[in-house]
Image (cartoon, rainbow, N blue to C red; front, side, top):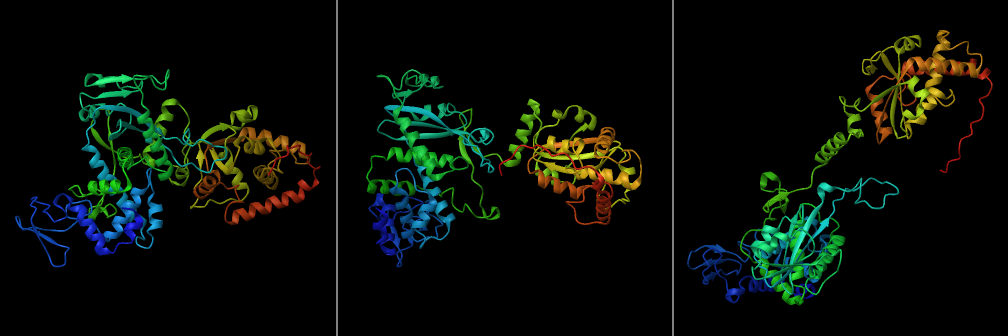
Length: 550
């Protein structure tokens, strides 16, 4: 049956067609789902039946994967026909576009397609393998959707590859016959299950992989692909062609690695088994698989947990050869694994933005360095993006000279005897800290604020401030003695700086804060300093900076 033929049917005709498939073993006449009696009464409406032996009532969908349906029979047959017409696959979104007049919810199509795959999986587990069989495995690499990073071509490699999501599909395909597939973490894990379903008189063909244990059960012939594609005695082209179909399915479904990979593997084996069947025979076989007794495990999948719904997990074969449930690791589990791996290798951990937003963890990850050490060796500071803080040994005295009064809502950030005075961020920590400690006041608001406070308080610690060169040199010596640098490498450094300014005082930061009395006072002092002192200095020498393309 094709979708066009089913679309021409009425609902009554679709019900009659469904009845012929449902009771095909009894010539289309209703038979009991419970005791198997071939005799049953039919109610007047033709939708309900009653067994003459056990006196139980049943319908066309009782005790089948179609049970608890809400769609009309015609729509269900259309979904099955749409799924059957494509050899490799048809996505749920594509089928929904074709049936948008009948099914408006994508989740409905999603669940029905997985009901079909579950029926294929149940049919596959009842299929033995005989004669000549080829076995091989392929790796499906895990993948994490990356940020918008320029220049990254292969997202399946580090840092976006996910080994904890990587799975293997082991395929055993009988030549001109059925196929079986298992999802595993390593391709040799399903060998015990393969031995249970294969005929001892069969001949198995494999490559140079870990298939030696099969020799104890049946004949095994191998081809070493490092030397030959095939030999007169052995080849695995049938299994390799199956993996080619799997790659095509992956291009259509995009994401098959996860909680449903075993169902997609069952669909693969179904396609390989029925590749030579006509469209009508394939539809009849699909209807036969869907009529197997038992409720579908996907029934009520999107119900809430209290109503019986539950998240599905992929069925894989573990290293002992037994079936187990597996699901992709969560973001928190993956983060903990990365942290443990970095701890074992000694690699420093990159702080997260969530740590900066935490009231208890935003200070974690900072490293400290004295200004004297940095001025002697600027390369000790990384070029990576991040945030930094400049701590003053005489910070409290300097702030009091400027008229600062503490804010109870913004506690001071102290590191030993040093008190934080300024917080900044940049794409290069080394360049930004160099501008503050070895630059000039035109490029550093921090240097300008410190000089303005010394000028207004007349401390005399930075000279008489008559010349630019002498004042800058005196300020450098003062910063060498008084400053401690705290820094950490992180992404989203602008957002991290904003969060840090919400957590700590940093009195010399006045540009990125909401206006405050001290901010206005310091801004006024800086303005007076520029007019009274800096205006009398000689102009700063021009800076020969390399031209940058914007």
